[in-house]
Length: 191
Image 1 (tube, one colour):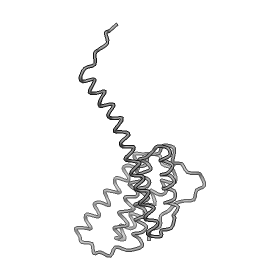
Image 2: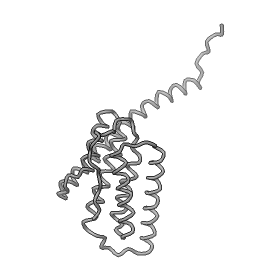
Image 3: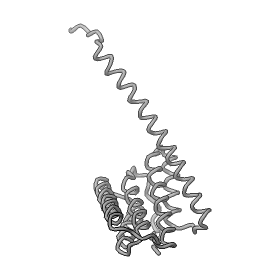
Image 4: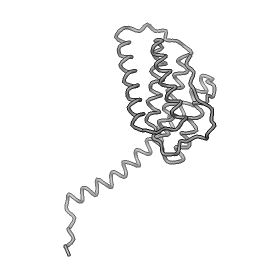
């Protein structure tokens, strides 16, 4: 029978690092919960300040975020609410067209940011695989509206729709985000 090894400095360091990693996970969870809280507050302010109607999309994203928090999925809640925030801004941006003159240099920078956001959205969306019907509908609608707004040169709106799609692409399906069947289709209206 082999004799038990004495703990070495190296194994002690590994054990300390592993224990510290657990604290890091708790810190990340706390940060995600704080992010969800902040995004929820911003969405509420947007609704109040703009008299924005309660849309099916915002209701769905808020409800899913609240359920995610209850289920301990704080990162998903924060991403859902971040999407709601960006989509709220996109809807509001449609009410007031871009009035500032856009220089060629700014237009190029906007196009790069738009393309990068859409690329990241697609990349994360495809990595996740299966998505709930409601999240898929909102994601596809966001992408479609982003492209439509960009083509119409409504850059504020286009960037917000693209960022909303990207935020939705980060939501991981844990089997918790399935909505009742028979829920009507959700679409964001661009102006």
